[in-house]
Amino acid sequence: MTRVHDMGGRFGDGPVRPEAADAPVFAQDWHGRALAVTLACGALGQWNIDVSRHARERLSPGDYSRFSYYEKWIAALADLLVETGVLSEADLQGKGTAELHALAGRALQAQDVAAALARGGPAARDGGPAPRFSPGQAVRTRRPAENVLMPGGHTRLPRYAAGACGQILRLHGSHVLPDSNAHGLGEAPEPLYAVRFAASQLWAHPEHPDDEVVLDLWQSYLEPL
Amino acid sequence: MPHDLPDHPHAHLPPDPALRVKALETILTAKGLVDPAALEEIIDTYQNRIGPQNGARVVARAWRDPAFKAALLADADPVLAELGYYGRQGEHMVVVENTPQRHNMIVCTLCSCYPWPLLGIPPGWYKSDAYRARAVREPRKVLAEFGVALPPETAVRVWDSTAEVRYLVLPMRPKGTEGLDEAALAALVSRDSMIGTALPAAPGQAQP
Image (cartoon, rainbow over all chains, first blue to last red; front, side, top):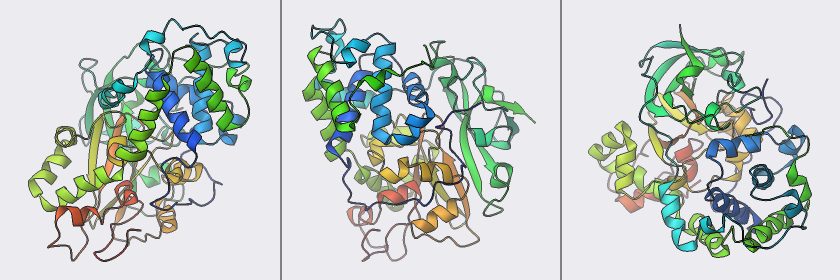
C-alpha cells in the first residue's frame, strides 16, 4: 500500500517545536558532514534524485521512525552505495581495500562544488505526452496512491490525496516521472500540474470551509471528472 | 534498481550517528571517491553563504518594485536567475503571494523539499514528523504553535511540495514601512515568513 514516509495527515505526532531563527544551520557537526558526503556521492553519477529519495523511503519503518533526519540520509546512502556496487558490504564492515576506486576520476573536487550546486538537477524536459488538462478543469487522483509500474515502488502521490477530486491550478510543464525514474525505467516525462483540493475533500474535520491544499501531480496520477 | 532488501547494508556501520558518518567518509576518502576539501566547501556554502537572506532580498524588492513583483509571480525562474539565485533544490521556483483573503504555507509531507537557493537548508521543525504530518490537515493549529492567528476571512492554502517545484511565500508588506529602503525591509522578513509559518515583523520589532 504505502510506506512510512507518507505521513501527511497522520494523527499523533504532537506539537511542532519551532527553533530560534538564529539556531545553527547544522545542529551537530556530523549533520553537515552527512549532507556533504551525500551530495558528493551523488556527483559520482550512479543514481538520480528519485532513486535517492526511494532509498530513504525503503528504510524499514522501524529505522525510519527511529532515525533522526540525517541518520536517514546516511543509512540510505550506505545502502545505495552497496546496491549500486560502488562499495561492498565488506567495505562497510571495515574489511575492504583502500585502493583507488574505478570511479575516483569522477569524485567531486572542491573547485567544482560551486558549479555543481549551481547546475542542480532540473527536472523539466521537452517532449512527453501533450497536456490533457487545462487550468480550472476538475480531476480525480488515482486510488490507491501506488506506483503502477513497480509494486511497492516510489510515487509522489501521497496517500491522503488518493481518490480526491480537485481542480487544475496551473501547468508546470513536462517533468521527469519519479515513479519511472526511481526504478531505472527511464525519465518518462509527463505534464506536471499544481492541483488544488478543498480541505473538505481530504479531511473529515477541516479547520475552515475555505482552506485548501495544493499538490504537484503528474498527468498519469489524474483522470478527468 | 533493487528495492526491498532482506538486510540493509547500513547496519554494518557503527550505531552512533557521528561515527557512522565518519566511518563512511573515511572509506570513501580512502578510495578516492570523496575529496574532503569538497565536503568542507559544501558545508561552508550552506552554513555561511546560502540562506534566508537571499529570499528576504527578493521579498523586499518585490514589496518596493511592482514590475519586479509582477514578473516574479508570473514566472519566477528568470527573475531569480538574474539575481543569482538558482541551482540545486531551486531549479523550478514558484512564488505565491499572501493577501488578506489568502495565506500560503509550504510543506513537504513526503520528505523535506525546500527552496535551498533562497532559504538555505531547512530548519529542524520543517523536517519534523509533526510538521510534515499536521501542516496539511490542521494548518491553523500549526500556525498557532508559531504564534500566528489568522482572521476568519483569510483562507489557508497549503502547498505540499510533491515534485521538483519549490515554493516561496511572498508575505504581505507590514504597515508603516512606506519609507524603508530594500535593506531595511529585508531585515523584517524572517525565514519562517517565507515558509508561511510566520508574518513579517513590524518596523521596530525584533524578527520573530
